[in-house]
Image: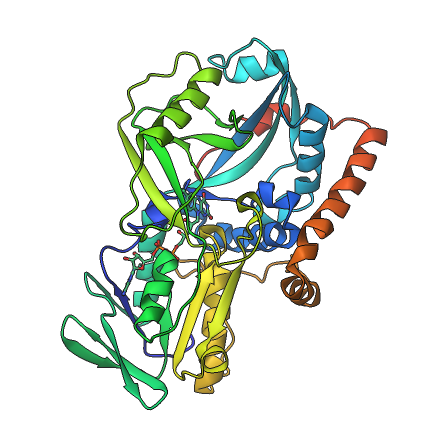
Length: 421
Ligand SMILES: Cc1cc2nc3c(=O)[nH]c(=O)nc-3n(C[C@H](O)[C@H](O)[C@H](O)COP(=O)(O)OP(=O)(O)OC[C@H]3O[C@@H](n4cnc5c(N)ncnc54)[C@H](O)[C@@H]3O)c2cc1C
């Protein structure tokens, strides 16, 4: 779109790796509000852009968070979290949360366990077929002249002094002014071809897949070890997961263990006693999380564009690492900005101003996060949690003194037309 001659190489099949193994949601990252607020804000902002450019591929997914006696997060805490999320929801075309009584919850999901249920909170995200989304992006890029080739990857880099000037792929030499490493959990392996390291903290995640649509709306379920898993219904069936386990296996080698299956089955069957124990398949992927200190539960899902000329004194090479599917457009924008800067190209990014079908869009009326604050928290990651917590503490105080959310939206909440024509 900025006039650069571009070739995209994919070692295997486009979109069939981590992206296909995701929870299939364009979402803002509700959970990051607890320790990494800016990532939620940025992701909500770019999810809004993705909604605009790929509207026909997204389906609104109301999600219900049932709260039971003895749960780690009580109903007021969960509602506080969702009240905080409400502030970001308009950015991505989401609705304000709803608080549901026990009876309303069971009327919406009759197969849910009634015993111990206090009530529920509801919010919404967007479901997407991730492989279809990748295909749409490839098609849009090709219309602008990009060449895309699956089944061949970067096998070796060609150096001239400290500059990468090309690569070898299936024995062929390909020369380019800039090479971008966008290999998700494989970025370290690809960087290794240039004798540099990009340390990652890969977290593997499995979903069980049912071909059948088991419930009408999404669910968030607390696990025994006080994590959460989703039940995600869609036109393709139902996903239950994901697990979230640190791994030092190579991303192409990870496998679902029997323990993961038992963990997911046990959690889901606890809340949905009629769940068929026989699932159809599993999917697994490794979250491409950049190395950072701290507890696994608090790992930032933010992304970074690495300029290897600054970082490693290697010219002509850029890596994009971390991030999520829900901010893929922004990750591409910032990576391309750096490539354009190096190439002396001034054309601005337009990927938020045109749909993947080529229709022109007005600029978003929402603002991104403050880059000064973002830089500050990147430089002082230990303050990230304190930053998030200060907002939540204030939100909790407000929650305690303000009236409960109104019920007026109830009918439309669960009956929004699923996919626009
Ligand atoms: C269990 C799980 C659930 C998730 N759920 C969500 C979610 O609901 N929403 C969300 O926004 N995010 C989610 N994520 C995160 C999201 O899936 C990833 O951040 C995203 O899909 C990564 O995309 P990617 O293109 O960077 O990586 P990938 O999809 O893994 O693509 C990288 C590609 O690089 C290719 N490659 C490797 N080596 C080479 C080479 N040498 N040359 C050329 N190509 C090469 C690979 O074959 C692969 O196809 C989830 C992740 C996991 C693991």
